[in-house]
Image 1 (cartoon, rainbow, N blue to C red):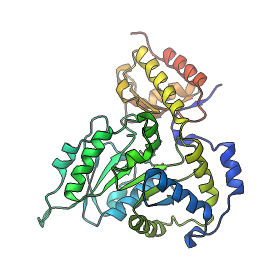
Image 2: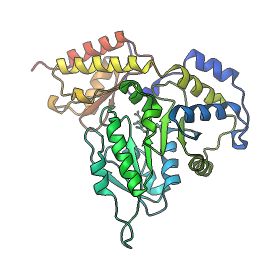
Image 3: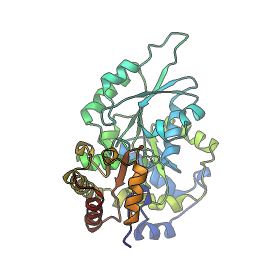
Image 4: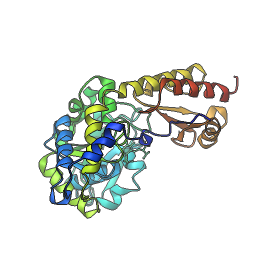
Length: 345
Ligand code: TLP
């Protein structure tokens, strides 16, 4: 049976070029800062995002958590979006690792506005009340279906953050998807944030790792916390080599994933599935199966019986993710399966 794995872009396999680069990578002990390939990747990532420095970390989760630890102090409050990864899927890391309280705000398709954020900032100076220590934005927004922050909104949020002197961290796990979809450089997006975490191991197809970028001081603080959490790696250049190929050779092709996601979204809409096509801006497609009288888990099982691997994004929401390795013919196959699974109205 044909298998089409649309569970996540994390399932992408490294390219031949990545494997060659990994084999040939010049390496050293990165805790001593003697791994030239890790250093090259960190400099490349920082450059692309217009920041002073970068830090290679094991995962997006580690990058986000290190950012929160480095930006905040214990008892701070962190403003985030109520469906964000940092709030929903990082095992309460903000509470455990930073000792901070989350202040989740509902966004519109995952997008927070400057006004909404301004209204949630704590006044400060009151013995009862936590300080707002950080604003976290997720771009693209995973659970909202891969939506992108409009640049004008980022600019307005930056202005509010500056007014209250609060740092902004961007969970840019898929920031390059946003950049390609919006036709701008990742730096153009990142300039509104003090720090950005972005994943090499999702649509960019590297096997492992993320980068955390920001000011030199911020990155040095994060480096200490990375060591504390056991993330000080040794000959990590083996992994970083693939990351360099990811950043230099895999960004532009994300447009193909977006086109495939759009085709899939339109197929779902044409079949009268419950989908908000406005959310299909990048490589994620989320639709609701409640009107079919099914849970997401039950629908995912039906898809699996036809070789289509999907994931649940909530009890009734199914998520399909397009990525490197998925071709247009796979999308046509999935559209055929979806047509068969939908009972006639
Ligand atoms: N997302 C994964 C799962 O954890 C849900 C996925 O399959 O989409 N930020 C965002 C916006 C993410 O989507 C993810 C991973 C992360 C952070 C964490 O990255 P990793 O998995 O590398 O820790």
